[in-house]
Amino acid sequence: MAGVLSFDNLRPDVYESGQTLNTSSYNLLFLADPTTAAGGGVSGVGAILDGRVGSSCDIAACPQGASGNYLAILNDGGVNFARADRQAFSLAGFDYSFIAPVSGLPNLQWGELQLSGTLSNGQVISTSLAFPGQGSDGNYHFQSASLLGGFSNYAFTGLTFNACIFNDTGVCSNSLDFPAFNQGQFALDNINISAVPEPSTYMLMLAGLGAIGMLSRRRSGKFAASTVQGA
Image 1: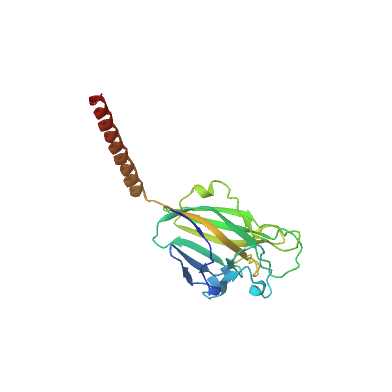
Image 2: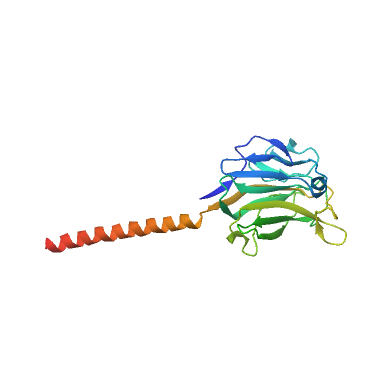
């Protein structure tokens, strides 16, 4: 069952690490930055913001182009998606943007969005995407993601989004040894996700289609027989 997860039906709010935002189909767990997580602390890492309200961001340079609410991940934090019914799901696409810590930054490639998906066997599949640059107006804007390496073909039981920032050596990092210093921030919207039926469900679907096909052939045979007899 496909669907687009937007945040327009949620009121603007803020979230700490360890909190879970429960929607009708998905649970979103907010994750602390590596330094806070290592110390067992709690930090403010998530927010539902209204893209139509300029005052949604006090200092940070929030993205332009949202027609409603979107999810902001702040202060080097992350967010993990999982289905409420614990079924596997696939990711077809989403819109994303960099959230600069302050406005007026040069239009450089500051970091990347990182995705880590967990398969049913525990294997982790990862990919990363460059953040969109600034528009001609000097602001960051939402852009549709182009998923690489067949990432959209996998069935995940959990999917984590976080960001890394390029350090002086050119390495994109957000770790305990190489922190991002609260600059790893991003926005997500219009997340296109689909539940992946379990193998037993597929078998039932195929069996149902087979039964429909058999019934259709029987009806066609009866109609053909009656036509011949009446000729």
